Image 1 (tube, rainbow, N blue to C red):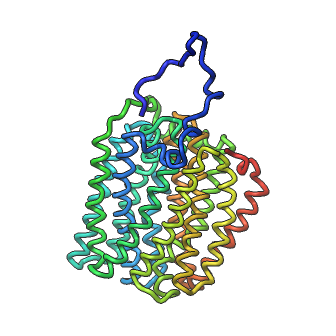
Image 2 (cartoon, rainbow, N blue to C red):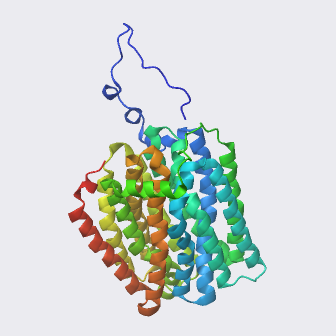
Image 3 (tube, one colour):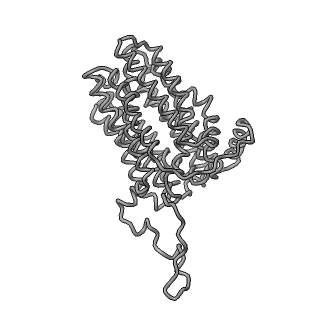
Length: 434
């Protein structure tokens, strides 16, 4: 992060140098590799990236093992859906207030608290599993508590990026954050599947608990500049209403948030159904489940790195629009496949297309929001994802118990395809965004 401003350069004769617009930008001068990883030149962001990467690998180990454990204990897709709903319910109730807190409290301080609490919850689940006392209701309760913490952690994490890099690298940092997340979805589920098969779920939960040490240490090692927080004179509820009014009154933010929310609500059924898909549809086991999760992550990682490399070119509205069509179309093909190798390839396509949608929407929202509203707007944006997913898990789990996972996925993808056509017809300005 740049600590001091540099005075504008002058020519030898003393006349002003050519304007910034007339000189090649750093992104234009650098090679493709430097463009793709531009945000990593900032020390604070490097600490965050690698610390959070270790933690997210552990998180995905727990997500993968937890879902398979519940399905193994209950043999019910509905119960797996309950776990997803319990994890996301607090987001529906508390994440908007989490955004207010993110605008009023130093993000690092808040993140240290939330990450430490998540570590404790993971270790509790590990202890229950090691002692062979774990029951499905334990998993639901701990998922509810974890979701409560995440309602405050997610908005702070989104807003924290602006404390770590210079403004010109924000787009790249958002894209690399997605790469970080999706790299974890490649490594975490694969390790979880192998660990679960060899040693059981307790080790997955225990390793997740230990992984939080990496991100907490990274947060404590950062050297941050002081950033002004929102004034505390107003009430939290008043600031919340102000953030909602601002978001609803901004046409671009309103459209982008609606697109992400609808996709999370209707399109993430496949994520809920993967444990059942591995066993009931593909006739596999915990390792198969881990491979399916990793294939999705590999595709998402490819999409995130592609967007990071192309960030300087703009056209994010076009990538977002492509994602709204590609995501449901690939899901429809996946629903018809019964071969594990082909399913893995198609899930990579699902991950790639979903990241085009979600990452482009995230970057565009970040670019159109006022700094003083950032925490609250990102809370609303996060709410549509973390709040939509549990509702999707609830209806998808119940429906799959009645008509089976494949037909449930067909219903999910068909709804998304209809919505994609509506976006195309009713929100043409979205695809023109840069």
